[in-house]
Amino acid sequence: EADIYQTPRYLVIGTGKKITLECSQTMGHDKMYWYQQDPGMELHLIHYSYGVNSTEKGDLSSESTVSRIRTEHFPLTLESARPSHTSQYLCASSESQLSSYEQYFGPGTRLTVT
Amino acid sequence: SQQGEEDPQALSIQEGENATMNCSYKTSINNLQWYRQNSGRGLVHLILIRSNEREKHSGRLRVTLDTSKKSSSLLITASRAADTASYFCATWSQGNLIFGKGTKLSVKP
Image (cartoon, rainbow over all chains, first blue to last red; front, top):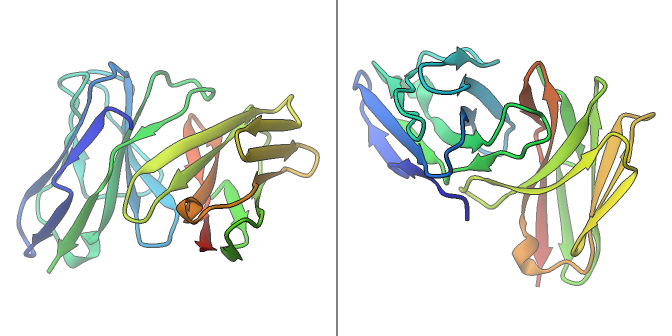
């Protein structure tokens, strides 16, 4: 099992609420990622970070924001949740931004917005 | 944009049989990775094959790569019920890994 953690694992929340999904890794990895995945579908990269104070948007446009103040921590925030945000969110990290390195994934947060 | 695409989308076999999944991709690559995802969980890296390799083994896994056809295959031999999961190929594009839609494998005991 990879040393990458996500909380909460499941979240049901009403429309308009602000939420933060937590992601932490203890491997000292510089690069971290957030993916969004609908059931049975592919992963879509929504945010990534090369290291502290670095954040970039991914291929899929997302209304969420991220921050990277510490190497080990990469939280994702939705200021005003909507039903269209219902999905699974996966956090991952890798030792390097080079393509030969594997990504380590957390267990995911399944978000339902009612 | 989707780089890798797995085939078939779903595969159901009996325990002990072999399972073969295919992945096609669009642009030239340095390497291709395969991942596994158990239901409701994160992905786990299985194997990486470099563009100058044609075949690679890891336990019951055998991966092939044909760069001329821009395709890869993942073979799981002597499958077990515990192999039931979704399997994704991933290739590097514009600085990030791009995952396909995956093949959902069901192994019946």
